[in-house]
Amino acid sequence: MAKKSKQHNNPLTPFVLIGATWVVTKAAETVYQKATGKPAPVKGAENKNASRNVLWSLGLTAALALTEFAVMQILEDKKN
Image 1: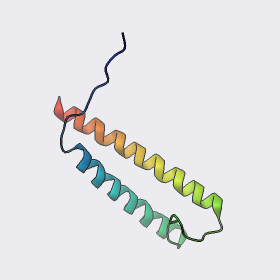
Image 2 (image 1 turned 60 degrees about the horizontal axis):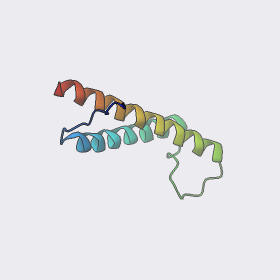
Image 3 (image 1 turned 90 degrees about the vertical axis):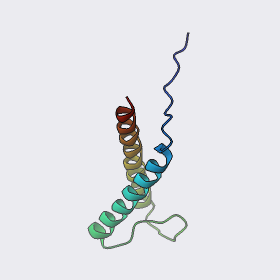
């Protein structure tokens, strides 16, 4: 028999995730700006450096995934 996955019934979860995602994205953009002196890559903008765009996307995606994982763990721990 398959195990049922835990569902998060905390009504604040989506709002906390949206806020955390926004904060991490803004922080990453600020760090990128300070490190390179250029604004972070934006979807649809003309930028000929494809490798930099791919690395930016991968790094930001990893940071956001870790943020979501951390928020879910924190909310789950507080609920129990």
